[in-house]
Length: 276
Image 1 (cartoon, rainbow, N blue to C red):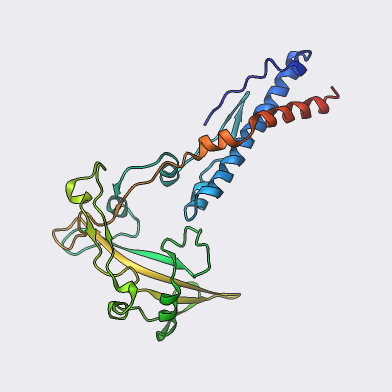
Image 2: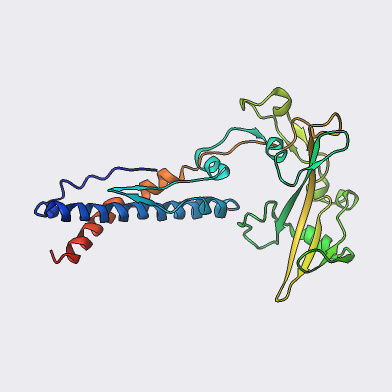
C-alpha cells in the first residue's frame, strides 16, 4: 500500500535549507506511514473475530524508503478477507494439505477438526473454528464416560462422543442445510442446495490435556472430506464456501488515521528538535 505526501506548501518549512527540508519530509512520511499501519490493526480489531490474529500477523511492518512508506498484506486468507472472494470449493485446498491420507484404490481423504469455545468465551481465536459450544451440549459431554490415552505432550483424558441418537431428542438433532448459491461462478453441481448428512454436534468429544503447569480442556467435532478416487468421494456441493465480503481494512485505515494531524505533529516535532 502506498500513498503520496506533499508538504512543499507548508509555510513553517519555507526557510529551511534543502537538507533540513528533506529531513522534515522523511520524518513526516515515517510518522504518517506508521499511523496508517496502526490504524489498519485497529480496524482489524473492530471488524474481525476468529480471523483477527491471522490477519494481523500478515500485516507486515512498514518498509520505509526515501520519502515513501510501504505496508504489505501477505497470505491468501488475509487478502481474501481484505479484497473479498466469490464462492469457492474448499475441497481443492483440502486436497493439498500435508495431512491428507491416501485411499486404497486411489484418491485421498482428510479429517477436519472443528474446535469449540466454551459458553461465555468470545471465541475470537482462530483455534475456535467451530464457534461457541452451547451449554446444552457441554452438559451432555459432562455426563459421558471418559477414557485415558497418552499422546505426545502430556496425558489426555478423553470423554465419549455424542451420538446422533442422543441428539435426536433435542433441538440439535435437526439436520442443517446450505441454500443454493446463485451467480457464484460455480458449476451447477457445486452450487445447488446441500443437506448435511448428520447433525452439527454429532461425534462431539471433550478432551483434557494435563501438562506440567496446567490442564487444558477442549471440545471438538470431526468431519471427513474425500476426493480423487472412483468412489466414496464427498458430494460436489459439499464443502462449498459461500464467499467473503471485502473488509477493505487498508482503505479504512488510511481514511481514519487522521493524517493531517499526524503530519502537523511530525513537522512540529522536527522543528522543535532543531530549535526552530
